[in-house]
Image 1: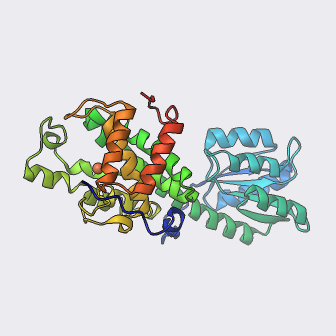
Image 2: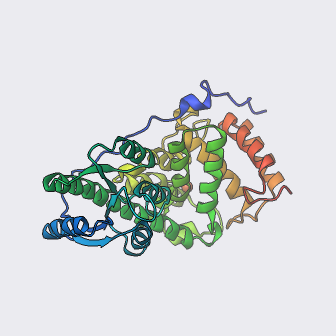
Length: 355
Ligand SMILES: [Fe+2]
């Protein structure tokens, strides 16, 4: 008879990993040609600002009201917005809030232009997420310094986003190679995030789980199709190749600092609570918590979908099987128990029937 599954020593919340700050890289890329939108209803002031910035090599456009500003941001995708607080149709504060609330525009830096003594506008601007402030009348040196500093930051976030996009596309490409795991990444991202929320993890861990759901098997790019799609059992040598995918995945994602929290999940998503998993044979709480969460949802998804070696199992059979696996100390018992409850309560949300 299997020994009862050992309980973790610490409550889940205390096991959450420490935040790893995203540091600004040594970014020296040229900012010439960066697009700046000036939103100011004072025709002379707006033109003066535009001329100063154009002389510095920036591509500049100007509009005189908030509605035009909003449209131009959507159509032209500026790298920075200089926004007067007082506009004829809507305040610059309200427009700033809209830009910062929209996921498509929230990373565009906004500099609010306020009167020298307008303390209330500055406070409201901070509240809605303005990135910086300039006083009227504008000091050209201050304008250039602030614009340059925010554009440098914007370039950095752009590059980061591009690199992430490449990795996510690559991960989905790997999934597409394996006809049996279609939609697996997206389901896993949703399951893992839902379980992370249920375990009351901080939002950055929930985000890491979502990303890990998509990226965890990216290392399978190094596994040949003949092994990945083999219908029968694998030979010892084939297993050796297959078992390299967590390490390879970690190596692929390692250069991106924004994925620091995701790396341990990628590396350890095939460890087992009893220490008999791979690649490092970690045991119990030595397996990072986020990896233990992903393992549980990964196991459920593997059971409830068709694989080369088995048909898709119904929800009830999958849960019964996983309960046995918890007794055999494959999965963290607390995480698994919470997942079972979540699956019972939110079967529809998880995209599986309660059959
Ligand atoms: Fe995997």
